Amino acid sequence: MDLAIETHNLVRHYGPAEALRGPERPQLLQTVERIRARFNPELSILGVALTMFDKRNNLSSQVAADVRACLGKVVFETVIPRNVRLSEAPSHGMPALIYDHRCPGSEAYIALARELIDRLPKRKEAA
Image (cartoon, rainbow, N blue to C red):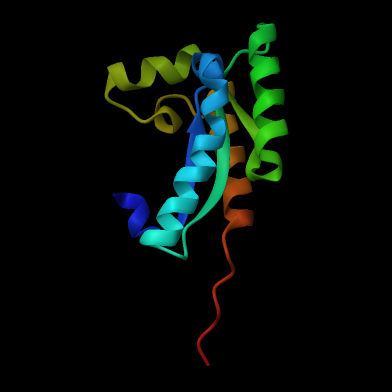
């Protein structure tokens, strides 16, 4: 029910793990439209982040292309790679950016954060 009170939503797409669910992608847009109509006319998708991307795998590239073709500019340019250091961080009880801020996964999350900030609506300054 979080979508009923949010104004912006960030969606994670888990790369090839969701590839078999391709026909369901438009369901995301339908769900957002239903919530807008019934509960929250302000709701919008701020962006879709592609995660678990493995550049060595053709399926990852195909899934990314399919998601971009389906959702267009709402998909962030930055992709989060599959990365061992990102996977290790929780077992050490640390966020990935603290565990290893220089690994490719952490650097990608930092780039995604910058891209996300650029998409946020500009706040009006008080008079």
